[in-house]
Image (cartoon, rainbow, N blue to C red):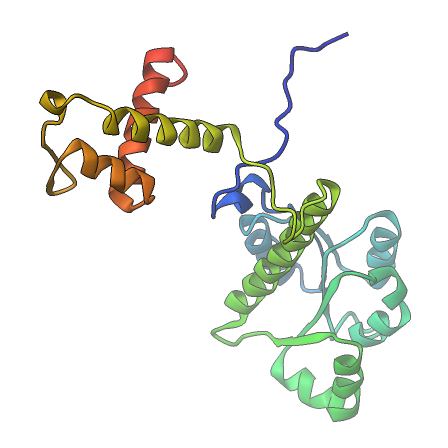
Length: 245
């Protein structure tokens, strides 16, 4: 039974076709024992468009990692005295963070205390290290989230193209809008060039005095004036047909 919903075959093939794939909504895990700092960072991440789960202790964070897949994980290195250090937590549960961007966050004095060797071990795992309290800290966090969003979006676009069999050799089929533009362009070129001599008036268009033949040439050559002319007629056509206000 038909639902009456007509699915489009493929998004329009314009330069901005990426806009038809929305930015992904990231799920972020934030492990930090400092309540006010954790809340502030969580609020910033939510404003950046993330779903945020936060934890004070590593056992809470472990449970969340077992229940959800996270795209970004922020872990404070200096946790509660009875808890294990954040970098050891990352090493222990790296398998639960596969595919996620993992970031260790810490104050400058703690970073100095853990020493070069532990920092190097984190770097070998591909873990980024951000220092709290620096002027760029918030911007760096937002940048990491934005980079992850863009990376996932690229993967989504690639998957979409793969599902539709789109390759460089086999480009995407034209959209309904593009088909309309192409049809109108062909019609206009033929119509303008077959007008009677008495009808071939000059038109002031795009800052130029153009004859019908010249407008046809602009359209046929797909110049900016030609594209504007066709777009103008498409808009007029849509209004007449009640497609748009």
